[in-house]
Length: 117
Image 1 (cartoon, helix red, strand yellow):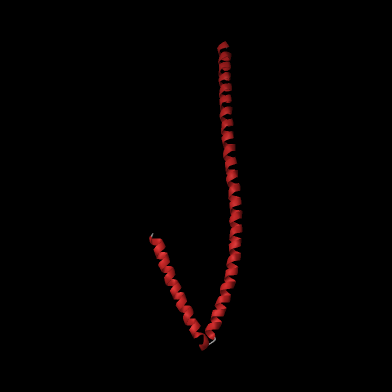
Image 2 (image 1 turned 90 degrees about the horizontal axis):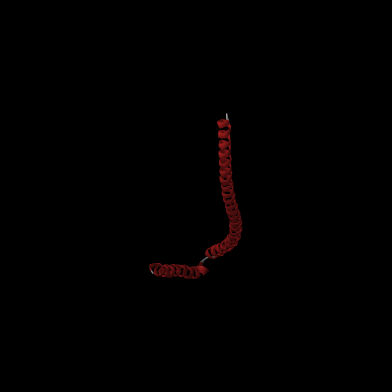
């Protein structure tokens, strides 16, 4: 019987040291998990702030495109009025078309020179 009791005490001390080792390991894992959660929280906050900035940027772009649309529609209306006015503006139309074609060729030449380098 004495050996049984002695064996239990030895087993009890082994269990205690195993429990302490497991507890230490669990504490380390908890600390690692807390660090990972903290990093994920920081990333989530960064994503939120970036998405808010991008939404503000896109809203501003929408306003800019709206104003550009107004300018283009006004220009198109003036051009349409000039075309429908008759013979008096044919000379102006020829100059306008020649200018646009010339601008296209100059732009094409400039872009081809820039892209070749």
